[in-house]
Length: 185
Ligand SMILES: CC(C)(COP(=O)(O)OP(=O)(O)OC[C@H]1O[C@@H](n2cnc3c(N)ncnc32)[C@H](O)[C@@H]1OP(=O)(O)O)[C@@H](O)C(=O)NCCC(=O)NCCS
Image 1 (cartoon, protein in one colour):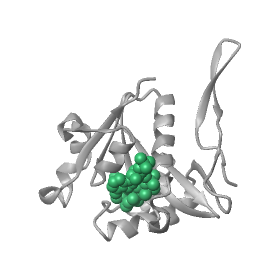
Image 2 (image 1 turned 60 degrees about the horizontal axis):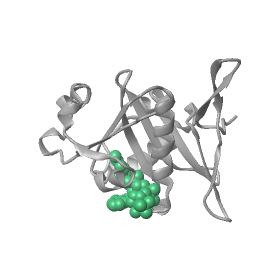
Image 3 (image 1 turned 90 degrees about the vertical axis):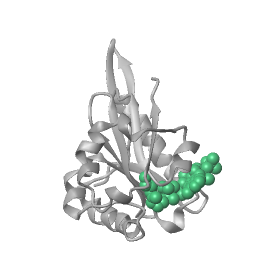
Image 4 (image 1 turned 90 degrees about the horizontal axis):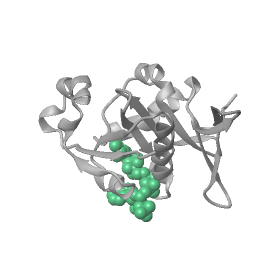
């Protein structure tokens, strides 16, 4: 069974703050319906296949299917006509800092706003979790600039370097740029 409701709003009842599922759907055209939801374990293979296509072209770092399963609760997926056309993951490092990663939109759906919706959904979710600083290491810095991120120094995020960069096979030739945004509420 699919959870069609991807993100949570806060509502106050009797003076207590509750999380509740929020608007699920974004209509992108008359013919197709795109919606975003949290990923489930049964999505892992399809997510992995989507990511692999971009790994092969050097646009994403490789992840094993096992790693996708282990982190499946970090992912949000975009679904269109029953198919995963995009995904993104939020990796939390501390009470304030998290990374946006594993961002991919199927080649035939790029340029239609799917990537923007995925990142905006994640930002919304991150805000509700109390996170303050979101970053990505990316070759697509212009895409992130369009969404309000600014280029910053990767040294601002030593937790990332410790987790991945120090052992990355591509560290000598890495051209990825750090982009970040601060959530204000
Ligand atoms: C990068 C990627 C996720 C963008 O997703 P998308 O769905 O094509 O992007 P959107 O259609 O939502 O575009 C949002 C905005 O960014 C702009 N944009 C998108 N890709 C861009 C690019 N490569 N260069 C410059 N601008 C870009 C769009 O013009 C749009 O601007 P606007 O809303 O002001 O008109 C997608 O191209 C992709 O999956 N690329 C391969 C994998 C990858 O590189 N992932 C990123 C790893 S961090």
